[in-house]
Amino acid sequence: MHYKNLGRTGLKVSELCLGTMTFGWTSDEKNANAVFDAAYDAGINFIDTADVYTRWAQGNPGGVAETYIGNWLTASKKPRNQIILATKVRAKMGEGPNDEGLGRVHIMQAVEASLRRLQTDYIDLYQSHSADDTVPIEETLRAYDDLVRQGKVRYIGASNYNAWRLMKALWTSDKNNLARYDCLQPRYNLVWRAEFERELMEVCRTEGIGVIPYSPVQGGFLTGKYRRNQPMPKGSRGEASARIQEFVNDERAHKIVDATETIAKKNGKGIAQTAIVWLLANPVITSPIIGVNNVEQLKEFLGAVDYKLSAEDKNELDTVSAWT
Image 1 (cartoon, rainbow, N blue to C red):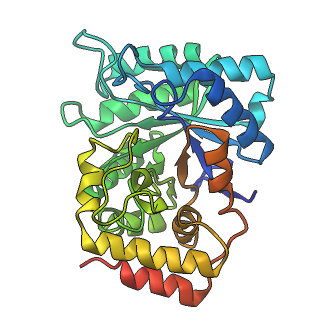
Image 2: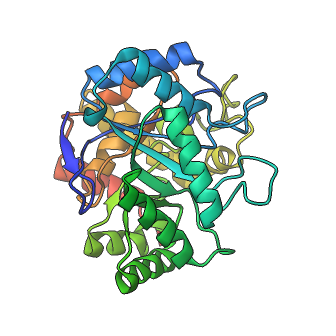
């Protein structure tokens, strides 16, 4: 496993980041523990979660993925200083007026709850899950800055921010000498390029911001799981997903999968591995977030490690997936 600096921070994170959005939803704690062990043994030292994971699942109060991580850390006795924990705040976690958002009150309450569930005394990367236009960005950043000064948070990041919001946050931090967003978590993959590449990519490049894209295989679409004129796979969590359906009905997206599959076969690799290594070929990208239900799926993604695309293969994928 290779390691990179997370933007301008001193954190060195593995090339692949383990995502936990399925834990407590389509994967139980037993499977989660097996995945944590296998990922750690493979050299993955970077785990991404969120306080809301997985509140949308029936009977799930939220905080379950964080709880799984905390239980595993304690039971496995893995060295805390060898693991980079990233979590997020913003989503609704209760019924009260201050149980969501990026206001100071919610952030201060939410971080304590996350620390308890994670069974740790600090969070390596604390991220705004999405923007909150009801709260001044300076209030959000001052709350984060206090947490950094207290030692409860090491670095902060943003997820699902557009370029002007990210630049406004960076300007506010610079003007007021506050902790700044050192990492961005955007949706980015071969079939969803424009949102990141249009403006955000250059902001991250010039400002030295780490990039940890989520959905690198677009919910399974870039695994070859969904094919033209075929029914949605039974049991798929994408079965009712508008995002997946959008690509299932998109001929351009299928041509991208076809090209990725051709290159994958030529290199003796899988479609998903090829989609991920295309991301890693971009020097702005730090660590794609891989979401898995079990160890078998993890092993498939690990095939992207030490896999390099030739200039010809990368150019072909760039061309077929180009946006206008």
